[in-house]
Every structure is written in C-alpha cells, then in structure tokens.
Length: 377
Image 1 (cartoon, helix red, strand yellow):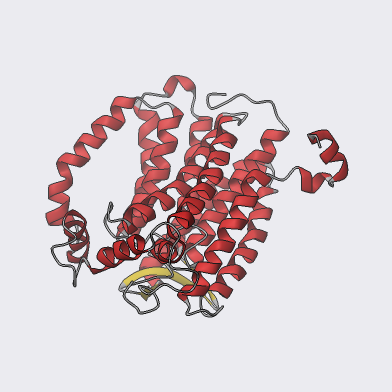
Image 2 (tube, one colour):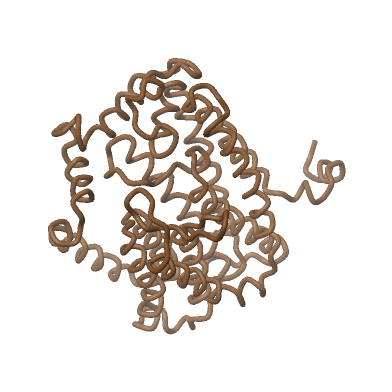
C-alpha cells in the first residue's frame, strides 16, 4: 500500500503525525514501565503506575505545545525565559529542600523544579536571539556576549542549589545552538582549552566534597568499592551479569536484593541490562537512535534559522540525558543525578524531555506547511 492510498484510508490528523518517532517513543516508555515493574518488586506500585500516568499527562502537554502557532511562540519566548529565571530565583528564596539540595518550588499540591524547565527555555531563547541577529554580526562579540548571558544567568542560579549536572545540561543545549548558529570554531576550541586549564582549580576550590568524590571515583572506581565507588561497581556487575539474553524478566538479583542503588532512577539501565541482557540494551539504544535521528531530520529540514536551531537544541538536550546516563552507569562518566529518558522513574526529567518532543513536533508541523531552507535559511 503506497503513501497516497494510506492517507486516503487513515484520517488526515492521524496520518500526518510523526509515527517514525512516536512508535519508538511509546515502545521505549512501555519497556521502561516493565523495567520499573520489576524494580518495584514485581508490582505496579510504587514506580510503574506513576511512570505511565506521567507519560499520559505529559503527552497531553506535548500535544498542546505541538499545536502552538509560530508567532505566538516567538512573542512568548523571552517572557517565558524570564518567568523561569524568576522561578529559579524564587528557589533560592523560598524553595523546598530535598536530598540536601534546594531545587523545588511548591504551589499547593504542585511541585516544580524550575531548573528542568530552564533547559528547553534556554534553547528557545537562544534560537530566538540568533534568528533576530543579522548575519553580518555572526562572529563578533555581539553574537556571543548576549547569548552567553542567557546561559550564564540560569547556570549561576542552578549552581547555588547546588546542581552541577543540570548546570552542565543547560550549558550543553545553549552551546550547541551557538555552534550551529555559525560562531567561529576557534572560539569553542579556545573556551575548551581554558576549561581544561581551569579544571584543577575548579576541582580544589569550586567543587564540594561530594562532587570531588564523584570525580575521584570516576577516575579510580576500584579504590573504594564499598564507599564512593559502590554505585558504579554494582552497576557494572549488574550489566555484566546479564550476558546476551539476561536473567529473565523480574529475575534480577542486583536490584531485588538491594545491591544496586537507585535501580529505578539513575541506574535503571543496569536494572534492565541484568534482566534483558545485551538484547535489551540494543533495543533501548535503537529506540533512542530512531528518536534522535528524527529530531535531527526535523532540524535539517527546517525552513528558517529559528526553527532549525530550536529543533537542534531540543534534540541535543534529549541526547545529553541519554549519553550522560549511559556513560555514568558504565563507569565512563562521574555519577550524576541524570535520569534515563522515558525509562527512569521521575517526573522532572519526563517533563523536560516531553517538552523537547513537543517543540520538535511543533517545528515539524511548521515545516510541513513551509518551504525547506535549512539551517542557514
């Protein structure tokens, strides 16, 4: 059956949805729910049920974002960024403390982590800034200083919480937008060189004790396998013990016997790998690859600079979550509180990634109604 015939049979609102992304997304979320069912001791509570409920609720939010008109988004981008920035400031004044950090605002029964909202907000603001910047100013200080402030202000507030992982995530999305906007490559290379040179000073004078412990554990995880290196050591054991086909659904021992810390959040991939093995890991990576490929396709087919940079930044934000979490559970990056999208239990990361999906679907809808002009359009 060809595409034209399919469109004639399937209602237009359904046929025009990006199923090449939605199908992998639903499969991945469903698989994540199965893993959380096992992590919860073979029960829907306390993890799997809330996981599916959150996905359903945030899917409605995603659909609303995807339906927004272009001009409304352009008008509301800077005010939205400012509102989230004020929310971050509010965290410092009246925010709720949890896990030793002050990261949440509470409005009655609603609990919001503004730093999560800032990830897509920064991408939106950066894309809007570079859309309005004349091409002749790309490569001058006027293309770097204002956008640098858009990144630096929220990072400064997030570091006060303290939350180094989220700060890096905000910076990553913003820097990707700057790079794709056409800023000179040597600027980024010089910044990287300065960062490398400053790393020792940051380690000794800027990082807190627990953050330094994460770095030393990353560099030598076997040095303290029962202390700071315990998380990574148990994660590697869980992943390695799964073999090719795994131990079987709901038959994991590392998570069920409480050897694996945080089996439902940060280390959910290790929980999955123990029970589903290499086959499960390949499935998860394939689903992520399909989602990210679609996101980059949306960016490359965008009709103007704003859409292209927005789609690329949203895709980069999702990629950051995936890459850092997978590197962390395999001992290739310092342990951070970065959940695995659509698999880890947690509302904040689910919200951020579903916002990014909504932005991508929004741009994809705009692309379908406009000529394609690419990143420099």
